[in-house]
Length: 125
Image (cartoon, rainbow, N blue to C red; front, top):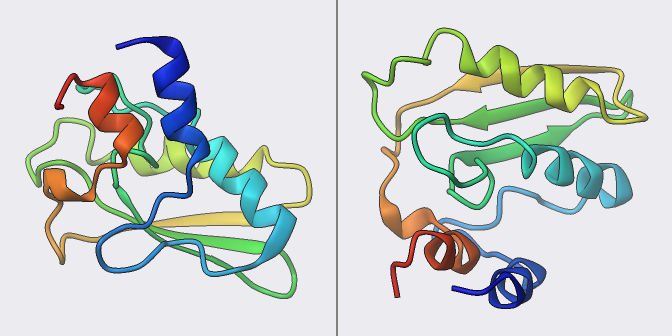
């Protein structure tokens, strides 16, 4: 796996199996996704966006951001604290008024939700 191949894969638009969690809110949404790509799963060395843990990103007219996300397993040891970490990362994005993260378990996460970049990082090809 080379850095060049990872960068190339990350530059491609990622489409999750059930649809892309970013549904067209422009530049602010792009910055929120960029922030989420800087948050890494504590057990798997891949960012949470490319890992497929982000199910939805909603930005209202006042720039409040709501994120629906899951974890790789319900028994994840960071289940109580990790949503706060994600909220903090989103709040740091310039233009975001506030952020809220909802942890959801349906549908359950599976490896099919990972982006090509994540698969490259984990040598899954």
